[in-house]
Image (cartoon, rainbow, N blue to C red):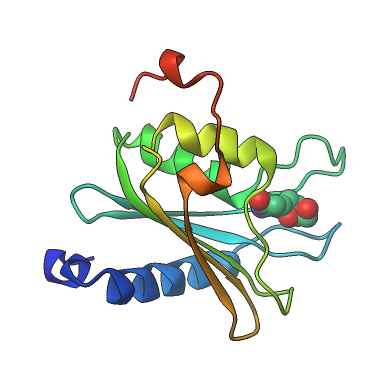
Length: 143
Ligand code: THU
């Protein structure tokens, strides 16, 4: 994503949400049939995306948000400006699960904007701090 795009927050989030929608196409979700795509905007404008990857054990399933974090950190990126999550199989927006909120907060200050939306037109615009308030371990985070 280009820097001029990020000058306007809403355009930036629109574009990032489209990246999350594109990532959801690759979801491996044969058990839940619930596809999720996540897109993380890095400080330099790079977008890292991820999808949910399920497993027949069910417990080993990896959520889209953590999949995107792993993609980014594996490429040396640990700092993010925004997150978008798409859940095309729900009409309404579905937010990140509790485990993902914990992991995301490792690499994001509370003010980082988050948008999530389903297949319908509704979108939720919030921040990681609103999604994960009263982070009892914040003093241990390396960010
Ligand atoms: N899922 C995500 O990818 N992210 C979330 O934050 C919530 C749940 C996935 C896990 C599983 O593959 C499917 O959605 C149904 O729970």
